[in-house]
Length: 186
Image 1: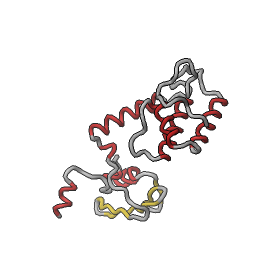
Image 2: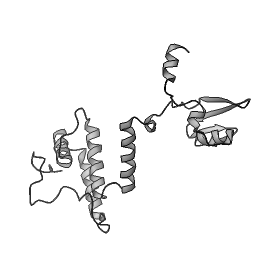
Image 3: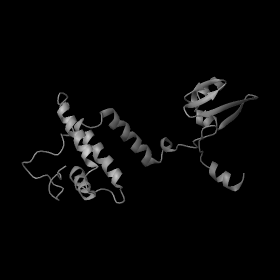
């Protein structure tokens, strides 16, 4: 594959763009020939030198790749960007969701606290109203009372008859101050 252009990150005027525009009209969907060409470019990325990949990154992102970014990740990032631009980018719904998640992350929200992830084969036991309820963690979900479930929340709701967060019900979430109590042996 030929280098995209010169060592400059700027697109020389008068030359065709490297990739289709990010946002187009609704009827301006990628043609099969555009998709085939992008797939060919992506396949050729593996054969390019690391310097050529850095140059392509600079031309697509208008800045160099992050320090320490591996060659493989650079290829994946370039491939993703080429595909995204060919297909006119992420949907508005996805963009809104990403903005919401970004806001939560910046505020330190709980949406990014995954709590404790139990390993396959783990048995979760919860006492509820004088009865011990046991859930087996499986690769594809959970098993409770001889039935398989994809969600702990559904199991917690079945046990209590009310809506509960399944991970919270089974004690898999971190609570403020809980780690301090564990460290002091309380």
